[in-house]
Image 1: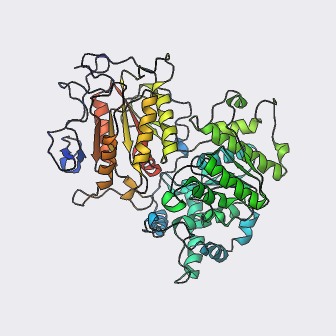
Image 2: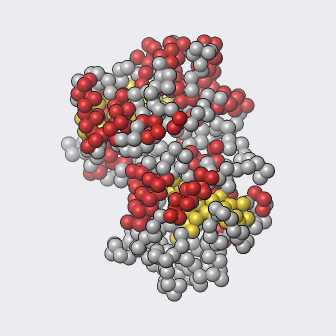
Image 3: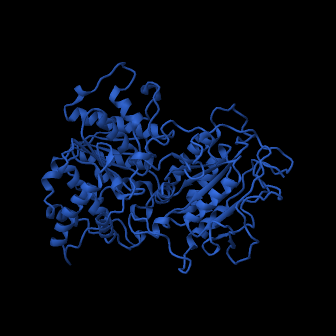
Length: 589
């Protein structure tokens, strides 16, 4: 059977399967990859049909049915624009020592074991005092943003706008993808290794000297927040844009007592093991960043969440204003730097925050408006040039595509989005469907799914064990189905970073070590238990695999793409920002 308009699909070779109680263990036979390191578990005998097998294409249940015609792949002009900005660990001996010290602050406590009742949050003011940061923090001109979804994007937009207005900016976000220095941006660039090392030792040595049994060393994120305050203060930034790490009330960034303006992005169900099981409880934690006399903005929220936010704002005498999504016409035909329909919501909030910061600091004279129905020039520039890796990012594989710089013709392309909540899963699926299926093609009926004749959609997924895959995977799959997109297979992998010390390029464990894949196998079971779509998938089997490591999954994808160069493999990487970062790191090695 010929697939994809005459192209024969040839996967990397797989030997016959061996049955198992939970999954089938397969060992990939490959010259480039020694067999002992290539074990991966899965439920089906074949990951992709061989030359002689009839392909199980989800859109072609009838073996004689031709596949629909191709649709061009949309690659935004700046899809790869930020490659030079992404931090890559340099590996200097002193920097590795710093990373080792930071890693020692990561607690092994499972987050679900403790509620968010502060977890000794009262220690934060003591750390601030030890580092003599009370006055420096009070002098920072802070934009403080909490939320479930979009808070990092909102902060990125806000910083970019204010930088375009001519201000020296500091941006603190989390998590990082490849290098911890990504969390600290000065004037839009990751802090240099030299500066990071210098500020790190300044904070580390003082805290080591003054902490002990009564006041232990701060935990990982708290140390990073303290470090951010030191960096931004000493670097004399005009504005510090701070993204809350988790929650709000007890977050390390909430030692800021008088920010210039506060924002709360979209709220949803996430970190429920800490923040609460209802939207009302979650909103109550997020509202903890609101301060008396400080203007605050939010976006349209579910009624349960909005009522809590409004009540807390009323108690503080704060006018909490609701911002609508940004009208694209106000951008004068410029696209947002961060892609996806949902980013207009975050951009609208960022515009309100930046405008209020300028107004309260007496700098409205810095902006120039050409037309009353458009944004100021600096705002448009800031919104269109904003960059945040791992969110709706498109990366052609540099190894497979090394001889072909044309992304439209790349045979292996990764679509990376760190969505990890049900709502963000839906946004991620809509974006992936749009950029792979729905561009520059004629509309078709809902009954006729759209696909590229010469493309294959693959899901590469992992999520933290505190997440509920029963809430994530169905939302992802349903939204893809609604947009006429179907995955030919799903690959489940452990995060590579779980093997590595913080930020290093250490290797995963050798084959002699026991690798726990129980979580990935449970994700696979959830995936295979999901109901099949009625759009041509009834009766078709859903293919899925569990790989023992991310490098093995990447190498299998590369081998398969190299053996089927007439087909474009479009791989959606999602479920975890840590997974996205691990993929980016491997692609850049």
